[in-house]
Length: 140
Image 1 (cartoon, rainbow, N blue to C red):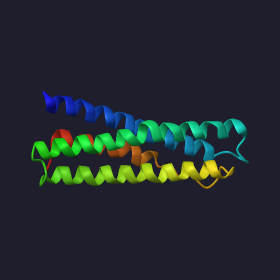
Image 2: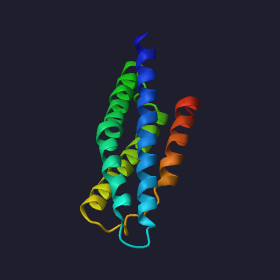
Image 3: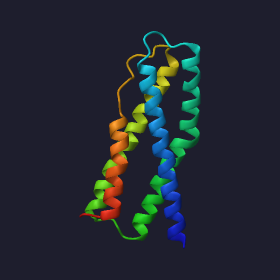
């Protein structure tokens, strides 16, 4: 029963984390496409996204890490090739989250919108798909 509860916590944490990273990416892309300096209305959403990141997205990422590691240790998955591949992709997703959080912080400190419009959405959308493939099929 504890395993199932941890699994629910793990999946819910992942949903919150990935959705938060997608939201960050969309805001960064939209603000990066502004033709001139950001207007007060555009700047008003940045503190809200940053607050959401600190209050929801980052804690969800940490919760996903902790619950996932506990599940992997409990079920003795360490040593499996699929888990190593999954952890590698999770670290890439965590790095993308960190990079985007830095971009948001810099966008807040300067009123300039340009320069942060790197599109990380393909990585953010493909990474969970590969992870699901690895976890469900355990190909190696």
